[in-house]
Length: 257
Image (cartoon, rainbow, N blue to C red; front, top):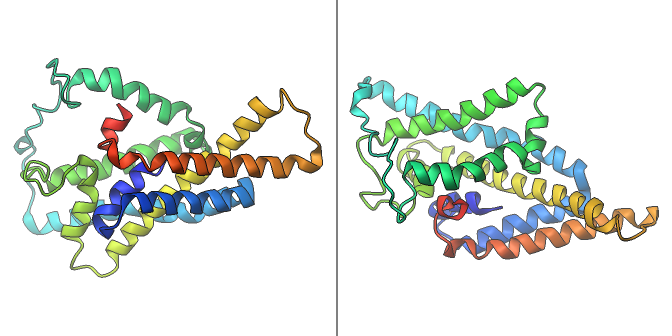
């Protein structure tokens, strides 16, 4: 759950990924188990402001820098080696078959039917608004970074070790002259990580209670609140413990595939 968060925090803070995962996981688990859905909703409202500000900040900074360098022709972007690469190479995940066979089912599950993601989409007034927000932030930030590094791949130059570190690398390199922007980035990343953990803990606690506990045990109404909080805390602790293994599993793309 906290994989995406600490993959972005670690290069900037230069601290242990394990400690990042533990602190974020236990923090979200504690207030979710104690406050339930209401605490998740109110916390997500505040965290959402910071989370949305991060990709918008990146797009604004790239646009600001591009204004001083002039427009660059689109044909400078040589993407043929990435798009429609049909080579049957099992040692890389940058082929068409790797995306269709491995990444797409995982992506559809995460975006379409995952309960934590559905909670966020339902917060929008209409389905159209949810789609616009998702594609605008994801596509906009991706296009901005592609424009920024189209002539110099940080991974090939060994400036970064994984693709997941591209965003924090950009922040470290390009936000140096702007006081406070790096802090906004870190606050947004932490907010997104904590929000993800709290949503998953809350939703999984509900699933476990209604699908596992209720069919086999009769629960008195007076004990309902205590049982759900216990389940939520147990789910949070278990998933946080499992996340300690993430730094040893490679990049986020490799883990998903």
